[in-house]
Each structure stands twice: as C-alpha cells, then as structure tokens.
Image (cartoon, rainbow, N blue to C red; front, side):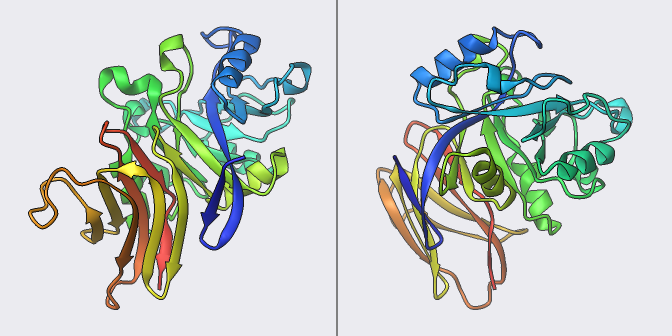
Length: 296
C-alpha cells in the first residue's frame, strides 16, 4: 500500500476514478468498467451515471471499493445545465432537482460530497459556482473534455480560492468511451479503504489530483513548505491573486532548462498570508495538483 505524509499525518493513499459512466449513460456496462479499472490497479471506483444511481453492492468489486454516485443536471445560468458530481449517496437518491442549491443541500443531507464537473466545458464561471452555497469543489482535469480543448479548470479554481472558497479539485476520466480511461485520477489520503473514510477524506481536502506525478510528502514547518514527489521538471506553489512561489521552472536563468527534482523546500516570506496549492509537472507534461492549504 502506498503512503503519503499529508501535513504530518502518515496515511494510506488510494487511487480513485470518481467520475464513471455505465451503459445507463452512454458507456459500456459496469462489469467492464470494474474489470478495466481493477486491471489498472485502481483502489476506488465511483459510478456516476446521468440522473441514475447504481446499486454497487450487486457487483464483484475485484478488490476495489465501489462508491455510489450520480451526475445531476438542474437548470443553471444563461440556459446552461449544471453537471454536478455527487458521491456517497444512497441508491434511492433522486435524480432530478429544481436548482443546484437544492441538489447540494440534498447531497449534504445524506453525508455525501458534491462537485461542479468540468465547468470550462459547460460554460460555468467561478461566479456561478460562488452563487451556490457549499460546493465541495470542482474538477481541475476531465479527460473526456480534452478533445475540444476544455479539459483544464485551473483558472476557475484559482478564482474560487481568490474569493475565499478554499475548495479542492479532482482529476477524473469522466468515462464514456474507452479512450477516456486512465488520463486523470484522484489520490485519496485516508486511514482505510471504506466508504466512510474515503468520503471523510474528500470532505476535508485530504487528496491530490494527478495525471501521473505522485506526491509522497507535504508539510509546512515554520513557514517552510517541504514536499517529496516523483521526478518532475516544474514545481510551483500557486497563491492567491498575483502571489506564488517556485522551486524550479523551465526558463529560469538561475537553474537552466534541463533540471529535474523529486523534492522541494520553499521558504514562504513573513509578509505572505493566505492560501497556496502545490502544482508539479513532469517532463512528459503531466500535472499533479494538491488541495489548498493556508499559511497564516
């Protein structure tokens, strides 16, 4: 079992795809999804069909934890439908809601979590998201939307954090077709692989999103941020508004372009107070993103 030092807590880390469709919504059946993700060494798989839940207890999980979820589509701003990713909901959870706020409230009432899926693809803005109270986060990367160039949602995420919504963000496949698989996943830091522990970790931002790079340690000691990860060629601490820091970055004349690292130690100036998130990039161009943390 892989481990992570998550700000002083030694936890297991579970590889998860949290946005998966079945033959209920334009994909192959649940059993095939389970087989493919289990063969790819995933630990957690959530079924999130459009407006339908799945009775995950009926399937052979092949060693994975299966989560019941749903993708909801209440009417949104400017004639846009919301795409809301709900996780940890019961099988009898309703598939239709009059508003995004009603959906968010209903998911939280059953102790689930709910995210705004692929806002860039939808045309949903950060202001639209902020108008709804208590989203648990968004998707920073969505594999299925990459074919029209709208797979990344970093700017929307930063605008939310800038506005004081210190939410996390998932990386997902949003599986509808075979070529959507295995391009983005979420690594969840939890003590055990149970629905309760996984949902609790998501609620409390104990995870990171990735396209491949692995984060093994993150700590904040006396205003020094320390991290260990797989080998990368870019390390950024993304701050609020125009703030931020870096350990290495291509084009920096002080370090050159052919430098890689698997750790960083970044001193944060006394004058800085606010939220930061780690973003690393491999030399193959693949990213990983931490959830935000606060420096007082």
